[in-house]
Length: 418
Ligand code: HAM
Image 1 (tube, rainbow, N blue to C red):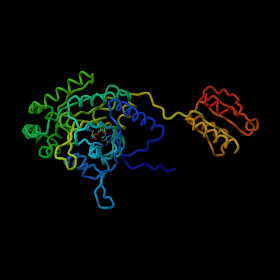
Image 2: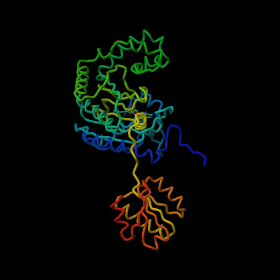
Image 3: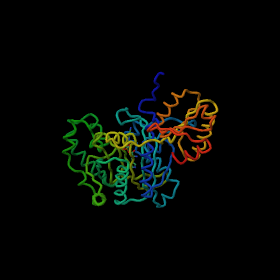
């Protein structure tokens, strides 16, 4: 059969792998619930302005990477490139605008028109959280510690947490002037992208990866010194709380994050097993304006990339999580045996057992191969002679031993033994 691949940057997830995905989702739901977070499901597409306004028109995601199309009425819609903006849009329908706190988590596909590469997809999946309606350094620390705990519960040890502060909005203008003064002296030696960033978005110079820019960025004076006392003491409180919570972290003033909505704490997580160019999670504190509201709503949150978490689990050779185990496989030769098997499977499945069976007329050999592939510990075998004698053969697939069980007691025997 000719291979028919899905579009570049997307992938099919087959049952053997889907068990790992469900493990991560279930682990996340369990850990997040212990911090009071409940699940929120939002649409995978939104009106385009939700992202333009939410993420900022100058960000790379909004300028270059969104999948945007018109709906039948001519309104512009966009496949969500991330979760935060849609969650905030949904929370306008709660009393968050009146000062209540909301703790929500989400998982699902996100879409960005990036050039596909290892760990970079056009449809990728995030597990994320948002804590909306409160602003406190201790909430930021709690949120980062929750991410740390989730990674540990997911079998991911040794992750590197990098944090930084972006200060309050009012700190930005003097800090930008401070950075512009320094970088304009060196701009001739910098890459073409940084030349553009000098006027358009000076912060992005700090996370430029081009070699020619590295020594210049490394020697930049600390803009955080120019931040207000409020911003500095907020950041000091986050760091102190993380230390008390035993979350190992390093501080880098080069961490600015790609989205415009951040204030105060920002953070990113990498893992040495897959390299520090590939973030497995990112987040921070933000302020977003809800439609019609004059005051921004504060929040803090993060999103992890599921494909990247799986890359780390793979590299760490974390114990594989099996999908749903098959409890028993039914093998039938002849129409009467196959019908009895179908009825038996129905009874066992209603009792919560996972049953595999072949319902087409296949040879005994083919059915035994199927039973082996199913990894079921027990196989039930019956052909015409077993049907006549009203018995079934139950085979232990591990050691090959088999016993005869009278048909009348077969269901009870299986319910007790599988
Ligand atoms: P982000 O850093 O753009 O933040 O994405 C979060 C994570 O999603 C990344 O660390 C990465 O693991 C994964 N990711 C992003 N793009 C791709 C891609 N093309 N292929 C595979 N994985 C990818 C956000 O999305 C923010 N909404 C996070 C946040 C929540 N901030 C506050 N609350």
